[in-house]
Image (cartoon, rainbow, N blue to C red; front, side, top):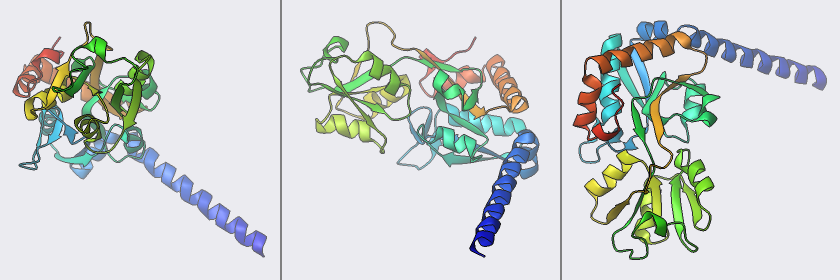
Length: 269
C-alpha cells in the first residue's frame, strides 16, 4: 500500500513538473505576442544603480539611462511597463524563472553569463574604477591599492568580482551583496577601496563628501553593457535590437546618455 502511495505521489510530482515546464515553454514560444496580449513589458532592474536604474531616495522615482530607454521601449511596443526589482546576483534566476521579459540595468557582457542569457547590442562601455576615502593617506593612486594589508571590496555578481580575483596579488578581496555594503565597508574603515564602474563612481563623487575616485593608469577590463533576454528567443532578441537601432539612429540614445551624465561611455556607432 505504501509503495503504491509513493508511486502515485511520484507520478503526480512528475506530471506537475512537466506541466510547469510546458507552461514556461509556451510563454517563451512567442514572448512578443504574450507581451502584447498582456499589455505589459516586465523589466528587471537593479534600483541602486546610479545614472542607470536608480530609485531616488528623496522622490522614490526611478531615474537613469536604462529607465529612460525602458520607457521608450514600452512606448515602441505600445504596452504598459512594469519594473521588477532585481540585482546582478539574481539576474540568472529571474530570467530563467520568467520573472521578467528583459533585464535592463547595464548588464556586463561576459562569457560566464552567455550560457544563461542572450545579450542585445551593447549601448555602453566602462572599465573598472576604485572608490576610496579622501582621508586615507595610504591610498593616493592605483598603485597603492594592491599592497599587503589592504582590503578591496567588490559587489557579488558584478564583473568586478572575477576581474579583481585575477588582478590582486597582495591585497585581500572581500565580496559583498547587501544594500550599500561596499560603501559601508570603505566608510567604516573596514576596507580601503571598492571596485565599481563609471556610472557608480559618478554617484559616489556626486552625492558624497568623503569619496575619492581612483582611476587605473590604463583602462582595466573595459566591458560592454547591454540588455539581457532569456536564451533561445531569437525573435524577441531581434525585436530589442531593432528598437536599439532605432533610438541610436534617431539620436535618442545619445540624448539619454547626456541627460544622465554618461556621454563619455555611450556607444553611438
